Every structure is written in structure tokens, then in C-alpha cells.
Image (cartoon, rainbow, N blue to C red; front, side):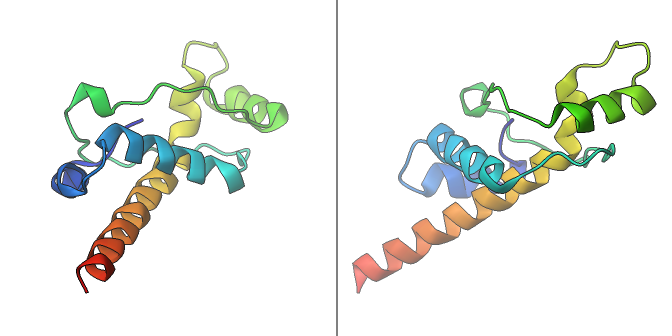
Length: 113
């Protein structure tokens, strides 16, 4: 999991470690997220390149929903579980990164006033 290329400059300029922003966004996104029993094709967005921003994590998912996806999309069991769920989770994390960056920008503006 990482940020989008379009978010890179704002992450570098936000005053915090970009990896911490990505991790916070992942935590926020997974709090209310529940895996749906359907494959959502991952978006073909360009991701940011710094390897230090990439997060490896374990996410608890509903076993039955995952089994449903696996039975229809990966009956031979050759795909990673991440490849089957990332289309549902990545857009939520990217939206949270945008929200955090917006919150940080608003806080910086208030501090200048």
C-alpha cells in the first residue's frame, strides 16, 4: 500500500513523515471497512515511487467474503489475497491520504493566522 503519484508533492511538503501519513490513512480506512464478497478490479492509478512510503500490513477480513471471492476469481489458489481485496481497499486509503493532507493544510493556515 502506498500513496498515489499525484499525492507525492503534498506528502513531501506536509511537514510530517510521508510514510506516517500513509500509515495513518490505512488505519483510518480499515476502521470502517468491511470486505464485500465481490472482486473490484484495482484502479490503474500511478503510485508514488519512494519505497519508504510503502506499507506492508495485515488486514482482518471476513473469511466468508474472501472465500466467495477466491471461489469465483481464484479457484486454483494462485493469487495473493491482497490482489483479491486491494481494489476495495486502495481507493479508501487514497481518499484518507487526501483528507489528512487537507486537514494538515487547514491546520497550517490556522496557525499562520
